[in-house]
Image 1: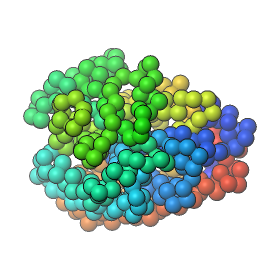
Image 2: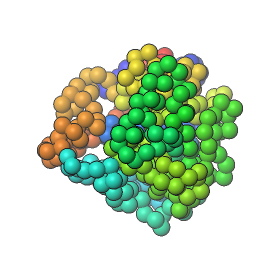
Image 3: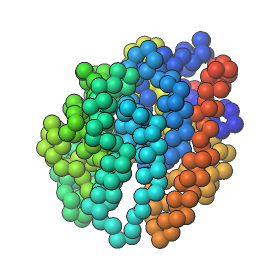
Image 4: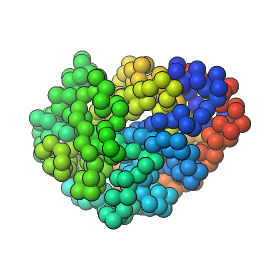
Length: 356
């Protein structure tokens, strides 16, 4: 542990780091969780890696994520990634919402954010990136969960939650994992025998719709219907099926998945987030290097916490305060990437890294 960061590793990643230190060329995947506004404390870490070009030097790196994780990573393969990322951050923070906003209105607001940071003319460049490969995770809704009528959708979510309490696999009766990917072939985790879902190539027609649907929170944001090239239906937030780590993104020996998180626990799905007994399966964490802020650092942020969706509710009548607090959190976490680099470059990571 150092001043503001805790670094933990699964058993394989831990052994590699303790034996020989951390090597950026071993990072074959960078995962972004469906963390909502919590991603704002990740932005300094992301921008440090983008500006320094540490990832993708020797081979293409998989950028896999759902919801805000997918939104972050959609900026990385763009022609001007730092400018694109900063545009996302500004548009995301400064978007304003009203108490009476319907799911359709919120979807329209999110569409405007996407159009502000993703330029249509730049998408072909992003799809052809040799440095980064995208895996945007979404969930195709089924049965009652596919309805846009609030009370019907609530029934679907309630049944899904109840079933998940007893048998986690129940979630797939209500939501099908759909991974939109870039590059010449699907990501390795999609070809694994344990993968449940489908994988669809990204193209200029479905790129923005995939990003939008990955953040379409049930009951809050209208789902995205009939995405080009994918099975027909309503697409919702990818965090429903992949909230945190729920796949093995770096399956080969010697590879690592880098994961900047906002907390110590990693949960499989959105429905597991309040279940203390549910954690990402240990075998999926073996190759993971997880970095997250210390409790002391979190307590120093506005309100003593990382920005989250509750801020949108508590500050719905005081948007200026929410926006100001979110910018302060961004400013205070801007150095976290540099702190991690110092830990790596000094070699202290070998002694500081803890077992997951």
